[in-house]
Length: 59
Image (cartoon, rainbow, N blue to C red):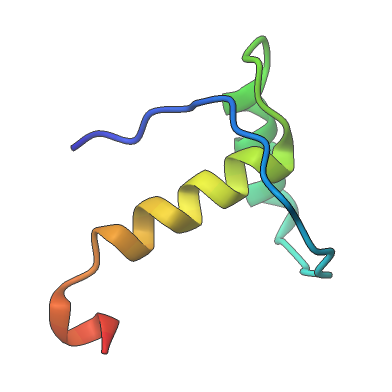
């Protein structure tokens, strides 16, 4: 299944994470003119990665 951006608001908790500048630029370019925040994109990308990992890697 392809990664699809979606609007989603859930209960959240703050975490601090550092991103390489080129990755930030790629993400910001991807979400430009989309109705999704940087945080929303990162959450969706993480969920997608976790849902699509091989079963051996999930355990």
